[in-house]
Image 1 (cartoon, rainbow, N blue to C red):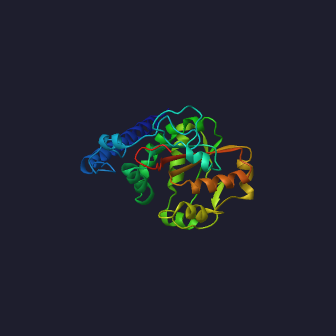
Image 2 (image 1 turned 120 degrees about the horizontal axis):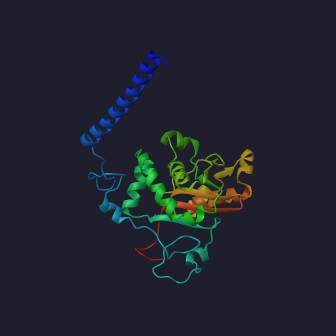
Image 3 (image 1 turned 90 degrees about the vertical axis):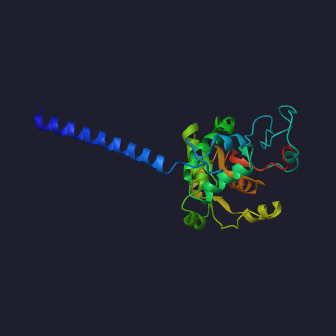
Amino acid sequence: MSASTLLSGSFSHSWRAALSAGRAAWRLALDIALPTLCISCREPVHGEGVCATCWSKLSFIARPYCPRLGIPFVYDPGPELLSMEAIASPPAYDRARAAVRYDEVARTLVHALKYQDRTDLAPIMGRWMARAGAELLEQADMLIPVPLHWRRGFGRRYNQSGLLARAIARHSGVALNGEALGRVRATEQQVGLSRTQRASNVQGAFQVSTGRQADVAGRHVVLVDDVLTSGATVDACARALLRAKAAHVDVVVFARVVDGPRSPI
């Protein structure tokens, strides 16, 4: 090897090392000048988006809960007992799991991700979702995010459900398929609508295109969304996937609305 080659290689290595050190110094300077703030209380935080105090206020959902809908129970009624909601109005999907209750802190996180370009929150939210839905993900063939209509996606520039699904895929190893399910009809925002209105609003809004039916036929699919309120949206998605011959459809969301302060059913 010639001296010029050695000199060139040494210079290249030194340049990369200097560049890396420069980037580290720049990140440190930014952290000092512009510390990361907790998305909920706006206090400085070291880490991912939520300070320890606000993290402690999140109401994580753990057993016992309804095996069908994932609604938390106040006490353990037995391993197979369903909630009254699951008995009275069984959904098209098989099972649903949520990481947290939809409370004040959870709402702040969801709105920041969805409307304030805080895409940096998706990895930690997705990690909590992967933990909550571990039982479902063990049996899953693919993750499918609830899609946005192209008009809304153009305005928002990203699909928050897609970001969450991508984070879950990294933690679980389950393949992500963001193209199989499409929103073929623009719908109104679900906020403020009654349960009946929500169901009517999304009826026929989702479809698996003919070219994508082979992707889901016979597969165990896990739908991913940010919030489960009435369940109308994920139910409509599940029906579209089942029409395309999906074998099973489960649901994993970041937060779900639970009626009452701690009521299970």
